Length: 254
Length: 220
Image (cartoon, rainbow over all chains, first blue to last red; front, side, top):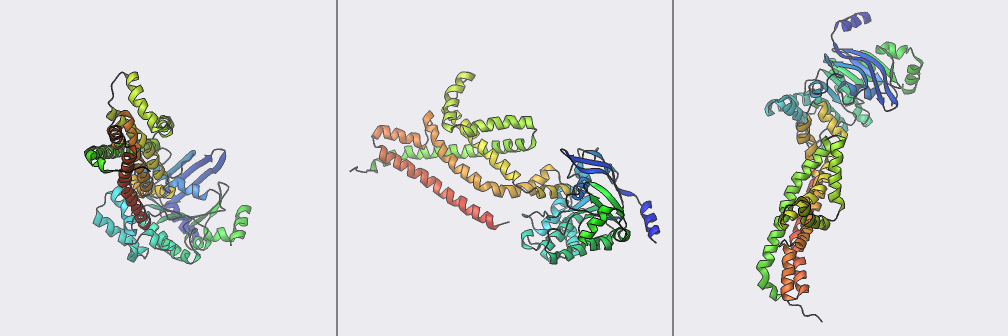
């Protein structure tokens, strides 16, 4: 069974291909020879201690972060060679931030329509229709006319997910989406992410929620000090971590 | 005890009125021109490389760090000699007051834009927005709210700064007051009256500014 799914994965096209990625902040070597391939529909969880480069790595995938060496190929486009029209790559890569980063001066609905209108040129009515569709999916259509400051953190994060989905991205990146949330709001956001995973979205999640990793991840990638220490399917990863550093990390958080 | 007598001022009401017109005209003209120039300078500093940015900073700091009176006198007396052109008092006054206020506005605009949280820029970029759509729909609407209070403050100062043009014989409110004083030898009444006119012009403006500020605090 396990082997079958892995074979199926291998047959699928590469969505993201990271080859020999290196990044220095001055003398600090924050990403070391990262190789990572994510196929269409795959769900990856990246775990690791803080400061291990997880966020930096996924921020390289939509070039919010520059890198020093290597290639990041997103759906066939090599970001190392793309300097002019990064926006064309970015519209295909959704991202959810730790601190939501909703636009506070726009209503929930406008948060979901502004990029559709300005980036995709969708007309007002169609953009609103798409926005309402995704707001329903994240179960907050009734808040559409409110402003971000008027809803809870969990609701804001779900809006942030809907905002990204409105652009019909091919990949969704999650950068510690539940770390800034009160405990009682974590579940509603995770449930939304689980739903999304069930629908076949290609996802890369940096998270400390190991329950989520067990439930939806096809693969768990463990990073420490800027390098990928090991990666495996969640069952093997949690049951039989191969590396000492992984075992240390797991013993601290589980 | 000094005997106050303001009645003679009625004879000079047209001179005072024309002074008010000149003062207001200079204020409004230099605020509008200064805001446009300040916007260009501010955006240029945000978007240009270090070299061009450095040149801009050099000129901005000249205008921010020297007294406007010195600038005015220099432009009126020194520049014509150097360039061998004649500049009227009105042109010199307009140029100097515009450049002066623009140098402050530029910093207000730049600071307002830079004060917007990095997450807002990242979210806009993440959605695939290019520079100008992002500026127009995400960054500027938020930044302008933060710019308004210092902008209003600088504009209030600007109205008062226009009184310096009297030193190069531009017939503004203060200059006309000086004319009236020369004719009547009653500086106490004249300058009291001039002060009250400035107060009457600016007090409503500061009230409006404050109300606007409070309104922005409540809104989103």
